[in-house]
Every structure is written in C-alpha cells, then in structure tokens.
Length: 345
Ligand code: IPM
Ligand code: MG
Image (cartoon, rainbow, N blue to C red):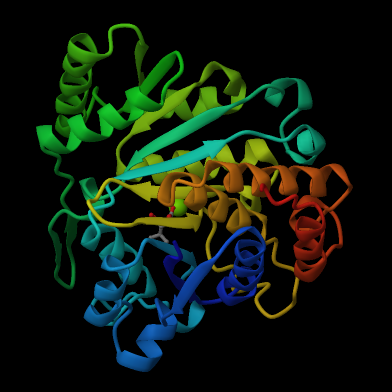
C-alpha cells in the first residue's frame, strides 16, 4: 500500500530540510507526496497561512509532514495582519491534534555538544507530552489600543485525554507540571490528573511539580524525568529548554496525534531565517520527525528504527553541522544519513 503524505515545507530553512526528509523516505519505502504552500509562503500566495483547501488535503492524507514556518517578512504586531504561525495553530486545531509528543534523549556521540555537563545529562531519556489544542493558545483574545488579554481555559475532558496519553506512554513515572499555586486551570488540571491516575493507572508513579521548579529540575537533574505531562504554553517553553540537553534544538522531532485522521510530524525548531539559504541547516530533527511519522503515523516501526539508527550512526561517524559545533552542511548531513541507512527487508 502506498502511503499518501502531504508535505508542507513552509518558510526559511523549511524547504531545505524537507528535501532530505523526502530522500530518506524514498529510501525506505513507497510514498506518494503532495506538497502545498503553508505559513508565510501561503500568505504570499493566498493572503492566509492555511487555506481551507490545504486543510482539506491534510485531512485526507495518511500523514502530514511539516518543516517550519515564519520569518521577519511576516512579523508584525498589527493584529489585523495574517501570521505564519496561525497556519500551524489552525492545522493542529483543524486536525484535532491534542497530543504533542517530544522525546528528549541525548545521543552518546553528542554528550559533549550540550552546554550542560556530561555527567549531568548521561542517561537522560524523557518525553514531553504537551497538550496542543487548548489553554492560552486558543482562548479568547481581546485587544484595544491600551489593553490586551489572552484567556487560558481548559475543560475536564481536554485534561483527561492528554493525561491518558501521558500515562500510556510512561514506563514508570509521570511528572505533571502546572502552576496550581496561582492558576485555576492548574488546580482543575491537578484534580483531573490525580483522579485518572487513581482510577486507571495506579501502577505508574505520579508527581505534581510547579512549572518554575520543573524548569530548574530539568537542568539540574534531567534523569529524574520519565514523562513530563503539561499544558500547551508550559510545554512549549519546557520543550525548548529540554532541547538543550541534547546539544541542539536542531535534533528534536515531534509528533502531534489524537484526531481521528492523520498525525502531524514536525521538528521542534523554527524556520531559522538567519541561516536560510546558507546550506547550514541541520536536517536531523526533520529526519527524526520522519521516523516518528513512520512509527506513530504509518505503523512502520522497522523503517522508523532504521532511520533513527542511521542518524545515530552518522553522528557516531563524526557528522557535525554548525549548530553542533562543526562545519558539515545540509547536503553532507543528508548524505551521511543515507549512507548509514540499512533498509529493513
Ligand atoms: C512549537 C512552536 C509553535 C508553538 C509556534 C511556532 C506557534 O514554538 O511548535 O513549539 O508555540 O507551539
Ligand atoms: Mg516552541
């Protein structure tokens, strides 16, 4: 069966990292690709970051692969102007992708590429489970000349379904991160997570940690974590922080799941407009997002493992893009991955 994949290269380094991702996919199986403009590229063509037609095409695909959106060209504080990020939020919401999975596992070859001390990060293997379609990202927004507001709202149903995802993904422990000493949404969050834990997952350990403290522990003792369960905004911030444990945000993939339809797979990093066009972009987070798509989106775990091993072997072999302190460019990185790809029979 040929899998139909919608590809959304987006802006900045997006197209430069999408191309290697497609080459890797072509090396491991049969796929049909359908590319569409998205984000800033779509604003330029259609005046909106995500057209109804593209959302519809995504709904009908087996999986959606996205590179990155945004750039200075579309940056504006004018609320009336379209923004590339609206495409991303519209796609997540439109496909019902409430569960965002962001694994953080530094590779031994890169222990010294992290700004954190080697002995601190050795053995870290955690997963951030971020709620992706609720909270302050999607609450009502108001704006006058002198005042603005963003509402943070959560329902019991929204909290329970993401908590279930986290408990199911955990091997031993879930750390639920909130700000229950201040926020009402966090108090509901804590109540719902605790009740679900008692009812369905008593064999998994559960701890509640305030977000400021979690930010600190993530640097002080990253090995402490198994699954970090948190709401949309906290998850956004903590996952960038956690990326530095691996040495570079250029290495972190993500999967967004939960709807009845296809999942969305994208790197955690952005469109890096400062290095777009220089050939310096690290394509590994994108390639690892392909692996997550193969595993979680298309049910091809062997192919996913082959891609992950290829990335690991390429790094073991000395591949270092500029974000990792080296001078290898995107095409060299792509070649290194392809050379180390042993396709499963
Ligand atoms: C991410 C990004 C997005 C987010 C932006 C681009 C809207 O930072 O996927 O983490 O905040 O969710
Ligand atoms: Mg982010």
